[in-house]
Length: 258
Image (tube, rainbow, N blue to C red; front, side, top):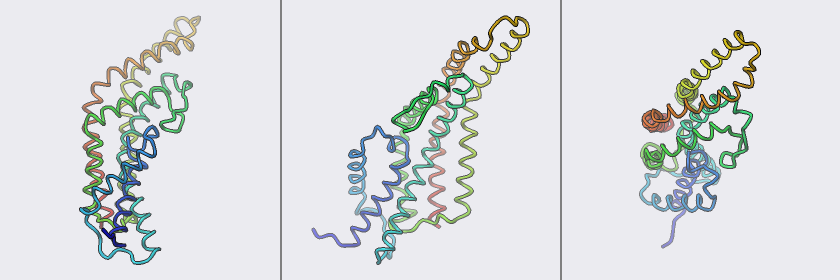
């Protein structure tokens, strides 16, 4: 079987879009996922979609046009993965906020999975959310969204990243990220605030009590207790967030395909 230049171009366009998703998407972008396995998975999925993917006509006829289109495919896949990853950034931010109030932020350590310094509670919330995400078939949603993206934006078509609607969507997602983080961290923050308030009264009534050292012992316990109470509600909340991710990815596709 002799492959034509057009067929090879389509193969690389699909592979580039998939590579963009793997750079940023949750689970797929994890450092614990070995690079050779990622490459093999990308090539395997590309081969599955190679001859059934809608193709934009005409395809670039020059090397410069091919390179620009390839970069555009990577950027589009990156945007899809970034929207999916915002959920985990919000949950990790909630854990970081709680960690700071609990006084455990000093116990941060380098996590090789993230390649950055992550707090204890932030790491705990992230992995719990990851388990829930896989249980809710979020990874299937992500791969399905990638497959459906070729219907709205065929392989080889340049995405329109200059739209004002895209800027508006990304800024709205950034605001939603912090709102989600605050909502998830609020029960723990409220309990820790009550503990601080009680310690303030104790310091007035009995000045000889070292409430500063006492807070280091009590607040982590109270914070973990609050997190354990909110975990059952996190499952139901995550279902809604996964559905929201699917809607936002579809919205992104409709914006960049215009």
